[in-house]
Each structure stands twice: as structure tokens, then as C-alpha cells.
Image (cartoon, rainbow, N blue to C red; front, top):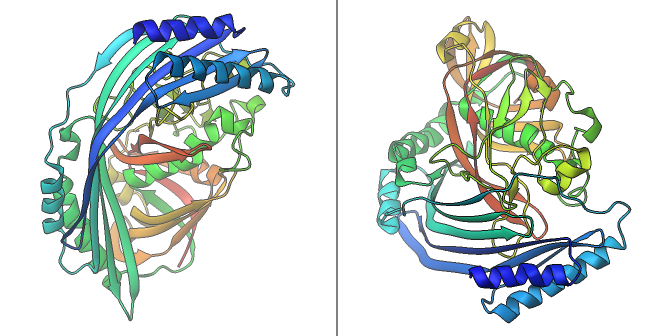
Length: 458
């Protein structure tokens, strides 16, 4: 492979490219599913191949092949260079890449040993028998990559991951239905610790809350959010709108735009207590990696510091546009997907309060422990989040469970933050983006926190 990759890079340069990037990627693993106590399916998947990106005559081209032969790789190089030249003729501004100190490194993690079907069957047996629908699915797979660029990057990585997902639907004709989704995952089987107990707890709550939770009285409340809620907020209202390709409109016709503009970095998005980081280097996490697909060494990204936008999520192309260095956010989900700016492990930084202190300090409010659904507009400003588990707070004490929705503007949510807990949790997910679409493993979370005077509706 070393010889083939070097020949591919040299061939691209000989065709007039000023930059050539070759990535070999293999994804191999097994998947299984159970539904209502019945085995649904299991299977083995494998995809592998080469991708090439080239910059030539001001344009950027991408091509991929599932074939491993040298001639197939060289043909992909030729296609990428031709596409780059054609794109360059259409561009007002030529594509450039930021100058970086590129990595030459190899790293891999131990394989994951898990009897997947047996584990999913065990989860199924632990779920509350009163739920109308229970379904469990999961996978264990390994992603292996080799990346080399004409300007010096040479990276090999091999990362195993495990992911399990559970859904519970409680249904009673006179009361409707209530759905709860839970998941866990990471780069080792340790990431599943405690998930069996979570299955028992959350499946039970689906039935109990359908019976006991009453519609909330509409109005404005001081709302205390759990780490799970912190996760969905940071991912949807900060992470996505801080992706620099999205800010420049690349996803405008597909997934939307952003309330942030390239020229207003340092804009105020929250109170001084709001600090938000995206960090792929956290060991064991689902979104873990040490070097991105362009050979840039990963590091924590301070997206928001003391309430102000501080840093965008970017790759080398968009970093060059605004004159900064890449922060190693280029990711691709498979060999035939191009690397674009993506999140990894995004979280609200913990503060000084204990969760109990925040509850005790709240006179009239709502504690939201988890959600059933969410929606946010295409500029990531106006959001709506449905409660799965929530409780009234009266004079510092948790009271009866309630059901309802939070309707909130992104800046309103974060500007109202006046208390941030010192606890911390991360929750796994799959982040979708791109055309063709690609989902990458991520985590999201943070501590318990409070935001003042937010609109809640039944």
C-alpha cells in the first residue's frame, strides 16, 4: 500500500495538481437487532476502498474507488484532478489550504470483544414488561484508515467502536403514547457499563410517566436542565452552526445555514458562565480520534468561551478562507465520502454548583431530565424540545411530573444561564451531515445547568 499511495500522489502532481490526498479506509463489523423479545436480524458488513482529493487550477476534486488495484487508484486520481480543474473554472476564489504542521503517526486501540446477540437479548429481558414496544439494536465494528498527502501527512489509525440503541414506547388508548430512546457506545466495552440498569429505569419511566405526568401550565419558568439536555443543546444550537462550511453556505439548500457569520467571531451567544468545547481526544469516547482526515493533529476546540463565540469547527480549506489554522475537524464516515468539518465530543464545561444546589436555589421552575423529541430551524436559532421526564420545582423542591415543550431561541437559552453544575456526563449519537449523507460517531453532554425565564408550553 505504501508504494501504491506514493505512486498515486506522484501521478496526481504530474497531472498538474498542487495538492493530492489519498485515503484508504476499511469499515468492518457486525450488527444485530431484537424487537419485543424476538430476534430480528444479525449481519456482517464490510466496506473498503480508496478516496482521492486533489487541488488543481483553483478547484478541489474528489473521487473514490472500492477496488484495490493500482490502476483503479490511479484512475481515481485522474478523475479527481479533472474534477478539480473543471471546478476551478467555475470558482471566483481559488481553493487554498491552511499551512499546517502535519502528523506522521500510527495509533490503534485494542479490539472490542462482545457477544452482541447475547448482550442485546439480555437488554431485552431487562426492559419493563409493561411497555408496548421495546427494540434493541447495536453494532461492533472497526474503522481502519491510512492517510497520506503530498505535503507530508502520513497517518495510520485503527479504532474499534461499539454502539447500542434502545427504544421504548408506552401506549394506552385513553392517554396516547410516550417514546423514549437511549443509547451507549465508545471505543471499548467499558462504555456499556450501567446500560442494563438504564434500560430497566427508562423503560419503567415510559409507562409511569405516561400515567402520571400532567400537562404543564403555560408560562415562563426558570428551567434546570440535566446533562442529557445540555448535550442536545450544545450539539444542535452551538456545534452545527459553528461548522465553518455551513457558515459559508455549503449546506444551505440541504441542512440549513447558521446564525453566526464569518466576520462576527467573538459575538455574544450566552452569559459569561457558558463555555463549550469540542474535543475528539477524550479517551474511550464514541467520537474519539487523534488526527483528522487531512493529517492535522486533533485538540480541544473552545467554541464558546465566557459566552462569546471563540472558534469555529473547520478543516484546512475553510480555515484558509478566514486566515486561521485548521483545528482538525475534517472527518469522513466511509471511504467514498469526502472529509468535511464535523463535531466529535461536544460539551458544556462544568461550573461550581452541585445539581442539588441548583434545584434548592430555584423558587419556581421546572427540572427537565430528558427529552422525547426536538426540532430547530435551519439557521439553528428557534428550537422546540419535548419533555420525556420533567418535574415542577417549587421553593427549591421537586414536585409532580409534568409534560410539555420548551420553545426557546438559542441566544435566549444561553444568555439566561446563571448556574452551571460541577457534575458531568456524555451521551452518544450519530451526527448526520453532507450530500451524499454521512453519519459520524459523536458524543454530547455536560453538567446540570439553569437558564432563567424560558417559555414552556403544554
